[in-house]
Amino acid sequence: MEPVKTTDDVEIVSREVLCESYFRLERYHLRHKLHRGGWSDVLSREIFERGKAAGVLLYDPARDAVVLIQQFRVGALAAGHDPWLTELVAGVIDDGEKGERTVAREAVEEANVTVSDLVPISMHLTSPGACSETVQLFCGRCDSSKAGGVHGLSAEHEDIRVLVVPSAEAFAMRRRHLEIFDSSTLLALLWLELERDNLRKRWS
Image 1 (tube, rainbow, N blue to C red):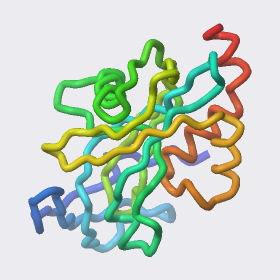
Image 2: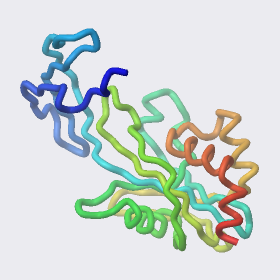
Image 3: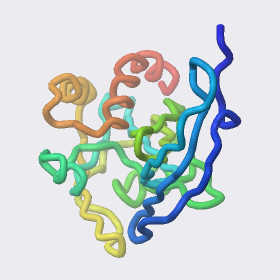
Image 4: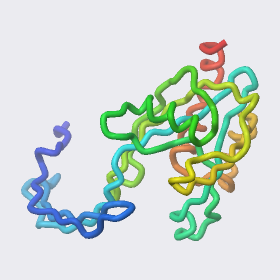
């Protein structure tokens, strides 16, 4: 089997910043080794530099329920979807911060919920053809008995509504392909549906 190619098989000729505002957009000029041998021509590709993020699916094993949030997303609006998305709690990983710390902080800021245990789910790229964003996903144990209301940081213009949803209904929402469009939330709910029984025994 042919060895897997790595970053050593890419030559970045140059890169330039096209926009640096709320987000950063760069253009890469590069070439890479080809599967059939040799090198590609120099390619120009725009990259949305999003950085690293972490998300947590908040799960209450005692009530067999998940805590989700709803907030406005301009990307969904631009794609022609309802811009108020139902999602898991997530946020950008600050410099020097671990993903575990990020999701614990975001759970309090976005849902007013404390995470007591964390289980890693995955690490994935959201849209590798155009975006650098890498997401760490976790499942977090929580008490959903007092979850609800509207939260978020006013300085970041967050207006976040909290939902407590029985796990069976959350799994049905994923399968209906109507209420949930966020890839991280879909992935985390699928993981929980597969691991739910083992997780409840672990957290019993």
